[in-house]
Length: 298
Image (tube, rainbow, N blue to C red; front, top):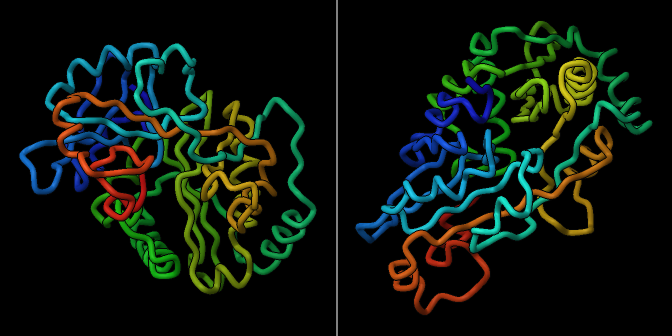
């Protein structure tokens, strides 16, 4: 059975946002959700990426979704998909840049990041790999609550404690923690789908963690450790496709200077109903009958 984003337990962790459905031919999962004010349902991929064991079978799997009006998802940029695999889609557009390390190529973090990591290690008590992440659920919730408040996170990315209780037990989960004055001040979570790719899932810090730059020490430790286990180490997406880099993108590129593009994908499964729900709506958003304000985050 596959680990990380492909494991059924990860899909279950998101059941507050839809009913998980397994697509057996491609080996992926989607969430079926009610379209408010209608008797209809549509589907969305798992957050933050849709991964498939066999992308060439995804189109066939759509036959099992005839009760859904449409499906929208972000395709894994490290999946083994080809253009031909996705020709059946109605929507296929660039979404975000994903920074990553190719462990077969030489890659040196920026001097700024190396200095910041060194300063953080000198101030921290410990930077440690945690073999059983479910044991640090309380500390994680404390730190993630701080992140939610700091960045006004809403929607599916504002995971509940119940969701995290499940995610921290999903096979393939890996965690690194930083402690200061005998208190956990920063945590990074990853999903490892060995031997191919390790995905940075989430990270959070306390105010003390931010002040000492604990995340620099944690990213250095995690990337160093993962380097011998997978081909690719993905630090996740940028905030968009703008050529102007924001702080998040600069931070990620300091560790992983090369990028791949993820694509926002959509399929209209019931054209008559889709057209009726979308009448008088304009724009490039998919599905057109929903709005970015409804979704918050894909």
